[in-house]
Image 1 (cartoon, rainbow, N blue to C red):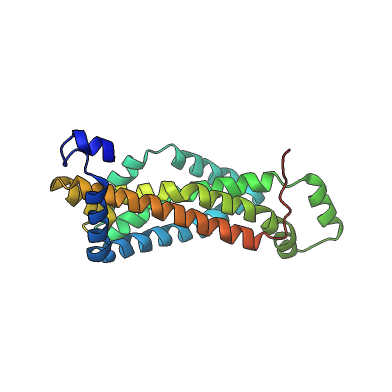
Image 2: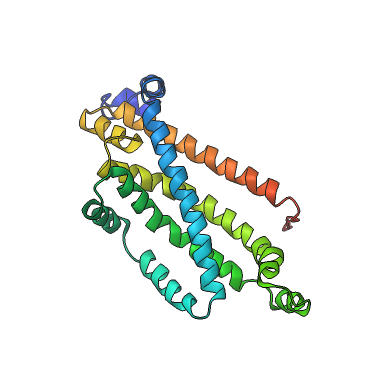
Length: 231
């Protein structure tokens, strides 16, 4: 960036000092927009996790509803994100509803499919051993299914964090006047490339922080699980 800024105009490649000033400007003047984006992101991820895990469990345990739910989830994964954004504009009046809908229909299938695959990966020997004790459905869920799918839930969460950040920015760019996406749109329309790069840098930092938090939570909750080391 420093080398490029020496040979181009500031509106093409600003220097690191200019970008640093823009970062300070963003952090001091746009905290409300950052908080709104974080709230939207957290709400959508938590809701998608809860509902997606429930759908994934039904897909893997219900012989009647499972095939239909799986078909719907697979169909959802084939619909482009842009299509959902345009549909949300027609269906919902409030920006919050639009963004929540867009993020949910995009993120939820990841959880549903990964939990479903986690159920399919349970060794048959484990199932036979549990059934030999004649457990109730609740006991089967508590002692076998849930401990087995928790790593899949963490894996999915870490996989979708970066994707969810990109999607919430894109959704705010299209459907909201508040949030980081809207501020990036304003910076673009006013030719403030220093602010565009400042927001980009902050989003990269946000992704790293959330990834680290998810990894720490996984390490704490799954500390009973021995990690395999490949030599």
